[in-house]
Image: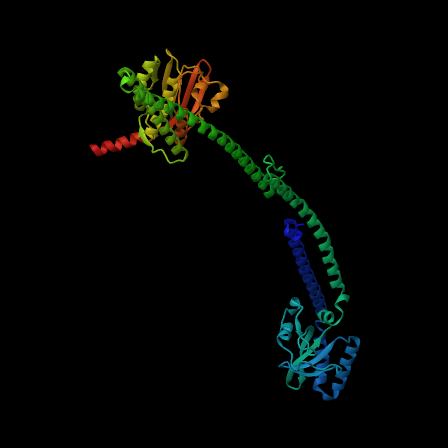
Length: 504
């Protein structure tokens, strides 16, 4: 079983309870300190003028030695009414000259004057409590009342009266008997109990979603690739669930793509083997025939066989070249090098190249080239290959007396190139596969012509390398049209003008 303190819920709950206890303890400390200070302040304010009143009564007695006994009696009477009050006579340096509690032993012979002077300043009433030193303790602070008085003829000093202090009582008595502290602790315990329970319940429901996500991830890890997480909120956990669902969909799609690619790879190997085996077998057969018959073979037959061998060798060479070109496009080793050129002139050149083949098949090869067509920006060699592949594909699958048309058209900042034919068309369920490698065009075009099945794949890769898309529109018994676009070269006129200035 997993250690609960290693789970998110255990960690969050532990941190929360620790912080709650710390905040509660700080609150109790501050509340207790504030309450004690308030009691001390109140006590000191209530007895603020005690020392002054006592000094006014005792000062005449200090001047007359015969009346000092009366002063001692007055102080004794005061202490009998309030036994917690202690009275000290101090000289101007703070030294204790006399005190009136013989049951106590002085622990300090001198009292710091800084708190006394602060008490005697004007406006000190608003700054209470002011804590002074307790002569009966080495380190305790206590509230007091003080007044200046004549302690001897010509000598000034201080009457220093220490008052009952809550701080002193708490340190001396059992701390558990303090009403303030007891209620503060009860308040802390109630806060911890209810706050802790509420926090634990909230954290449970928050982490419950994390547990569901963990289970979903584990099921996905175990092969349940359809597993998804239900998104119920727009917070960070909801964003995490969305990210997981997106990742799962991507992985599942990639796996389907891998399965598809694996299937295509097997078909590719089979098709390559077939396409290589057929011409190689033919070449081998005709060469063996020529070698066996030797001089007995008629000259015309020898030339016919050699032409067949040459045709098969050329077919093999083209097939290998197309495979090599397609592999470079897949690996992005063959990147386009754009330059401005006239797409109309390129189309005319390609049409002239295919005109003999069109005439031989009895196909009408035409074009529609508008005037003043702008220059385009692309790799001229690659685009020539695309147009050549599309025209060659159209000628292969257009019957005699048919027509193959190449059209150009300006569309905003793009020039559209289209190659259409009047062949048998492509069935709708097979259009999605015509760009697959070695997808035999005979199957798509009802048996007219032949091909390696790589021409359209290469054309699509080249168009995609230019940031475009090669689209196909086809209707059975009506024909097929391939369309792609190239960007207009916007700065062609400016470059031409700059070249003209340099020449002249």
